[in-house]
Image (tube, rainbow, N blue to C red):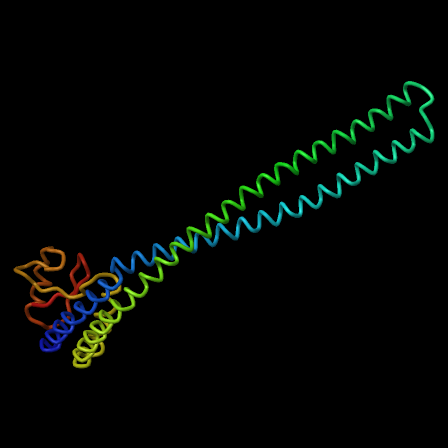
Length: 236
């Protein structure tokens, strides 16, 4: 392994890690985190609002069905009254049967009316909740818009710094052997930084002592050596 290439790779890593630090600063920005929290709050409120709309629609359909059912019961009562008027019951059993039928209709109507009252109350509660959701969402949206202005200015400056640092790293990467760079990127997917110096007989990445056979390879520079513990490339 060409020692010069390993040193170039090491120099590239320094610039690459600087770029990653800037990128992490952008991701961990307190302003960004507040924005994401506000966005999630608004999305959750939109979800709740939609769920309430769906529930209200179901209740509206049920109210229509109850009105139809009450109308049918009232028609039955009217028909029963007309029947009694036209053909009065001839005995107590017939009178009792007609009375029971009328009672069932009235009880059914009363039950439907109770359900209708519950639906009306629930609809009123849902309406209040929707108004509260709209108010809360509007307030958070205003805060979100204000934060967005601050964040856009902040990110513009940091993005410029990130682009500049990425360009520096790309310039260093152009000097490195493509196979070595590919190995670096493959290791970086699992651990960063991907390269470590040999300090004494230890990998400086994980502070693990290396076997003597690997130490000889590292010191001779004859081959690319990876730490058996952390997987980093080790150079002197």
